[in-house]
Length: 192
Image (cartoon, rainbow, N blue to C red; front, side, top):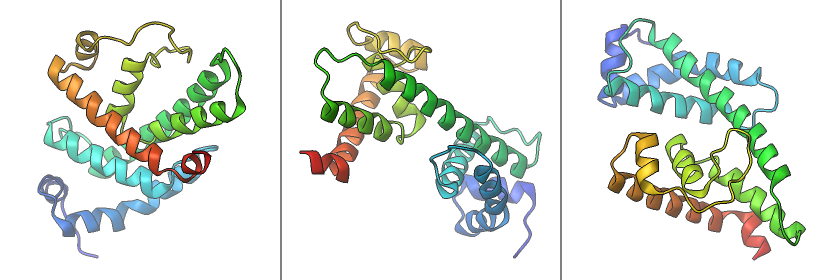
């Protein structure tokens, strides 16, 4: 395996250099995989964590958030660890949200579909999860569903630091993505 300097790795990731990406995968995947395996109850696979970690690292590098104050490997490991922690916390939140969700007429089939849709929604990228949760009133820290009208795009735009039009467009794209995933899900198809 060829050796690359930190600056070559960073530059290669910015430019989406296939050789650098392959190098990063070969060099760092096993340590991420070992870290992921230590998390009890984590539903994400090591490959998914690694892929999301690389994607976030590239975005952060391009946005100037990575200043090179640490080794890239340390940075990638930290991002990947945070992904795992957020996923575990999200699972706990979903359990609370599902447990406390009140149906006027309890229907087990509908409840199972609801749980499945929450799981599918939480597999979207974090920006989509955030904007859907805000718009649909699923953003409370206690896991409760807010029983009020949807959050307005003006408020969402302030919370996520976006323009109102951008928030509206992102929500629409994320909802379309969620709809495609839900309709393609074998368990949901089976119940239709």
